[in-house]
Length: 221
Image (cartoon, rainbow, N blue to C red):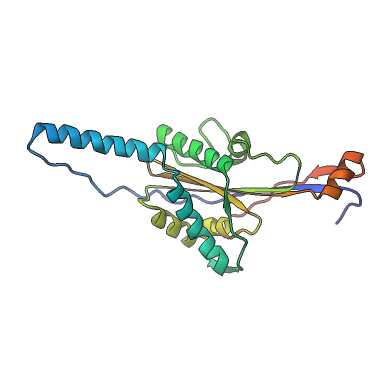
């Protein structure tokens, strides 16, 4: 039911079910019978791994995620038994990336796997604290996918699209932005969607003729 001369801010929380942790099965073995080459090889490998974990969100990393997400959003797909029509493409958001990276690092360092941080922070707490604000927007929607143990973007995206709850986040037309991070094989994908007030609506809000009212959050199973 519409309320005349009032505008509603919709805050939607969409938290996906867990993506089961997959055990790591691969090994990296370096064999060499010369002392100096061993030292050099180990140092090079260590430096490479440090760079990858600290700078995993490279341009290539972002582009591959956006390509895989938007390819499916462009075509539409089934999430479980429900078909989701084509949806607008997602763009990258650095605040969502920061929220995702912080949670991936926290899970890896404290050895847990959950949407709720060890200190009690929720997905919304982390995303808003990273700078993705809802104040001043007509609508606001956020969501999160997490996974652990996958070895590549292809593997983690394939798993998320095959999982009904995660797939719903990926195909949700309310989401227009995304940020993803990986740290020590912990993957976090944070979604956001904000709609601004029109210039005319902004004038009415400033004049006091419109008042923003926050609706209760909603979500999926």
